[in-house]
Structure formats: structure tokens, C-alpha cells
Image 1 (tube, rainbow, N blue to C red):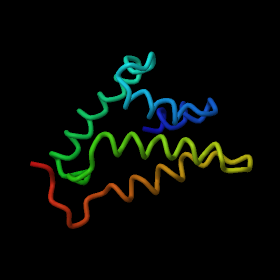
Image 2: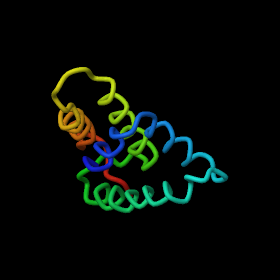
Image 3: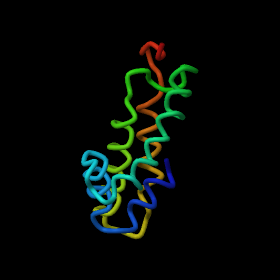
Image 4: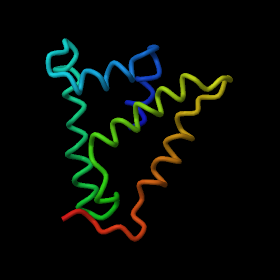
Length: 102
């Protein structure tokens, strides 16, 4: 997740382009972005083990990662906010009273 968010901060507009490509199968970027969906397998395993909320979708996770990358590019200052954003996200993904996925 950290690598995805950090890589997405390197180029202005990349998070938006990735999200657009995932939604548009006719996009020239769609095939290369499709590989990002393999994170769904990792997510499903974490959900089955009860470590991650069962109601989170892979699309929501990717959208959130892209949102963090966009936000990191907008944050002024010398500090890299990615680790802080990831910490906030991971704390929010932890199971707390939500049933594990089937």
C-alpha cells in the first residue's frame, strides 16, 4: 500500500488517471492499471482472517490509496505525509465490531 501511494505521488494527476483508467475498459491505461486489482486477493485474505473489515471492497481501498496520494501532493512542507495518512487509514480498517467476511 505504501509503495502504491508513494508512487502515485510522483506524478501530478496520476491518481485521477488511474481511477479513470480502471473505470474505462477502452482506456489505453486500463490493462496496466488492471494489475492493481491483484490487491483484491490480499484484501480478501486479510478479511477472511478477520484482520480487515469485511465490508471493505478492493475498489474502495484503491480509491482511498489514490485519495491519499492526491492529498500528499497537495500538502505543503518538507515532510512526507504518506506514512501519517497510511497510519490513519490502517487504524480505520481494523476490525472493531464488524463481522469478518464470509
